[in-house]
Length: 178
Image 1: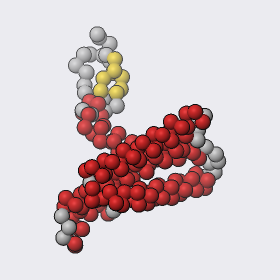
Image 2: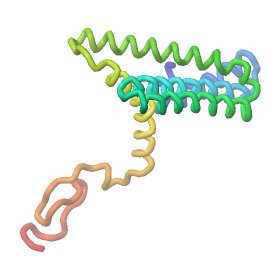
Image 3: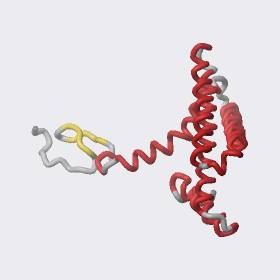
Image 4: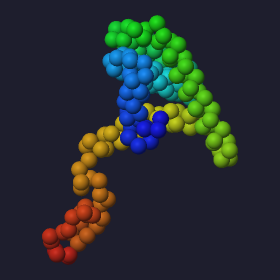
């Protein structure tokens, strides 16, 4: 976890875990990478299932069934992906998924207690959905921004003499001319 603070995205911490486990137990890097991938996959599945289940409570029953169906389909799809590509981990799939759900529920409880301590009352399901979604979406937003942005896209836009220009550039047109 120490390395996750200094290397962006948490992947550095995972790489360090693989290194340490390989060094200490002599397990192959391929097996360790598969184990960490499955751990991340079960965590992602738990978050998505909880988002769907919480969302189901916000809609009428006819729509809630779709959320429940999507959650069940996601679990089954992930199980078959694990069975197909990571057969070694198939026997512990549901155990790992259950632990991931429990961990996410405990995080939500901590989050709700923080909201209560700040005097925020009500709408905990909506806050929980946003909390869970942010843990999935924010890393992707950061990665996408880093990959797709250019120098001019990173700077705020400020007005100058000939309209709106990037703050990092000087206008070659004198102020007031077109």
